[in-house]
Length: 152
Image 1: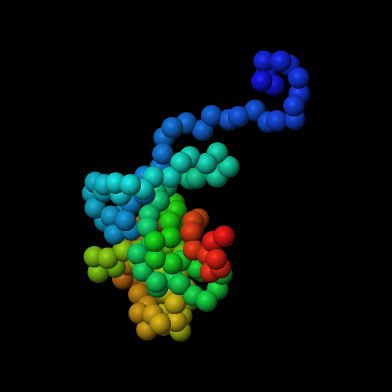
Image 2: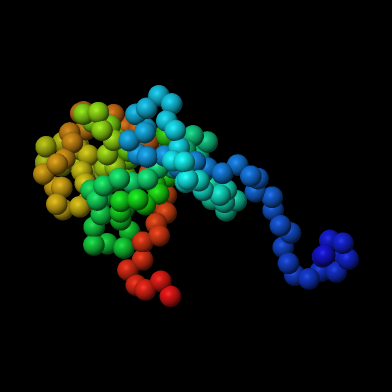
C-alpha cells in the first residue's frame, strides 16, 4: 500500500527470503556419504542470519555438552555447523568423529595435551585425545526451544 500510494507509512519494505528451507539432519548423519534430512524438520530462511557458505543444521543427540549454565547444548537442540571450519581453535565447540561416532566437543588444553572435552561434568573422564578425532565442522549457532519456566 505504501508503494502504491506513495505515502510513507513508516513501514519497511518486505524482503523476499525465498522458499528454500534448510533441511535438518541427525548429527550422526555427518558420517553418511549421502545423508537424508529428517522428513519433518526444515528451517525457514532467516535474512538476518549470515550463514557460512558450507553449513549444515543438525539435531544434538546427547547431553555431553549440557551444563547448569544458561548457554549449553541439550538433546534435540538445533546446532548450526560451519562444515568448512576444520582447524581447531582453543575453547571452540566442534563436531568431531571418533570411533565411528560423531560428538559435539570443546577443543581444550589439558595436562595431557589438547583433547576434545565435554562440558557436562558427568563426562569428564570421556575426553578424546586430539589426535584420535577428525574435525567435521565448528559450531557457530544453537537454536533451542528449551525454557525452564511456564510457556504462558
